[in-house]
Image (cartoon, rainbow, N blue to C red; front, side):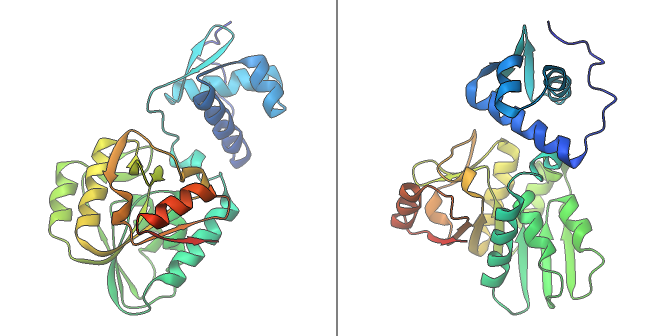
Length: 266
């Protein structure tokens, strides 16, 4: 039975539940369709918990409810508040290694939106002489109060999934930039498919940042390596450095290196 519109509405989305929601959404997206019973067995949950979580995910537009379970939605993208709970240890290692690899001098640095790039931004605290340009509202808030870091924020239409400003206003702002380094998060990176994300407007903004930077650094956990999503940004060879974790597929890492990308595994 498909749940009612009110099902699951009262339960708060705690960090633990956000992790569970992300796991359910990932499983449905990968399979295309799953029954409640199969999801419950896979994830060790009760049937009632799965039904409540599916109701939340349906309201967020991340799955579609069908009789007895849920089906995948095209181009479904988990909001940041859910993605932030996935692979936290890997993202922390990636961010630390990325910041260590950045030049230790005053510079203008762009940081795009995403959970791993947010971790990078947090680790910039304590550096001096930085101008950080970002179109991600959460990253701007993270850095705004810290001395030694000047924050420049792009305007535009905010995407609720990533807290990023996108659109014509954002793209006009990006056209006037001159950047030493851009740290970019992606939803997929592969030698064949290049750098990709879910949203075409976000892809245009990311492309603009990359075209105005001297060095493009991509940060992505291993689940993104070898993956291709809907909106292409640039060929993978445009990235000077990919920082990812040791879980990345070895064959894809080798293909990226052959394409001219330096890959740092942490």
